[in-house]
Image (cartoon, rainbow, N blue to C red; front, side, top):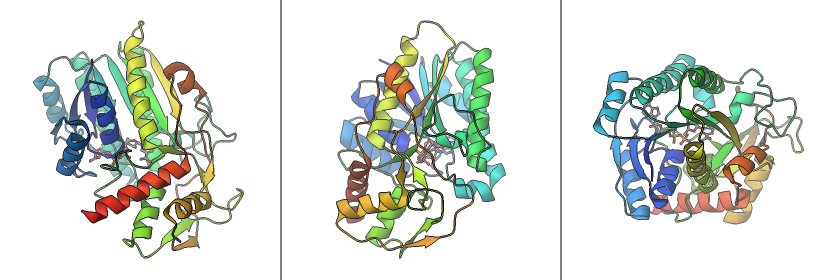
Length: 340
Ligand SMILES: NC(=O)c1ccc[n+]([C@@H]2O[C@H](COP(=O)([O-])OP(=O)(O)OC[C@H]3O[C@@H](n4cnc5c(N)ncnc54)[C@H](O)[C@@H]3O)[C@@H](O)[C@H]2O)c1
């Protein structure tokens, strides 16, 4: 069994992955400074589901000494899964330096501490934003990058380039996982997406509008060259995504040669328009959503979805859930967390 340091373990994807790791018998330690998560409620929710109370260190990865000192507390951390980053495309446009500082400095500090403490496997949360506006979709891992559409996307490109160079000088095994659009909640509906900052991803914006936290929502762009004029994305269920991390960890650990670097797309291969996503929500929730069609938003690409054959082949992973499962669980989670 592995001893895994999860950064961003109290965030959305991190917390669901922590649950999967604990359920598979691994030991988990978290670093999360709480900039976009509710630390104590999340640890409680993880406990309710798994019976394990994880320890979170409230440390900012941009502080090297504090980050390094977490490694000094534990012996034999063998794997790092690095989720911690700022993730809002829109905010990154108005605060590019803040995004580069947090996402790039955080990665460098973590790699330095990991190298100094003999960590053997490193998994990085990348994103389909690295592809920019790709010429051909679905994108494969070898699709040539276009300029990133936002500083957030560029921060992920820079982080991947850093990993590439680091890999040439290190014995660590590395996987960069390019997520498409993670959404939905845990099957138990005891945990789901609950950012402390304003939600900006489509699915929580939909559920927050439906429950009345927002009066209405805007679909950004109505005249794109797509089947209904709205952007196309590839929504991947959070349970499928969490499962991919545990599989990627096992893949890296099984690998006999040291110092490998593999990149994997994690999506479903199905492009769904924003309007189709709304209609899937309306169908599962049996309600009408209050939305307006608005102008395109800076930083958005028109259309992207994944070719995930590489993950299927090397990680024996494939997504099991679709857009309606995503909307169903996200809606049940929104209802559950508002009852409390
Ligand atoms: N959710 C998505 O749509 C999506 C898509 C592609 C890639 N990603 C990437 O996946 C990762 C996880 O995303 P998420 O949706 O779980 O986001 P999230 O905001 O829910 O989780 C990130 C966590 O990291 C913490 N954090 C941020 N900066 C930190 C720092 N400097 N030090 C310590 N903790 C810090 C936050 O408090 C938060 O709990 C991120 O790297 C994100 O860029 C997310």
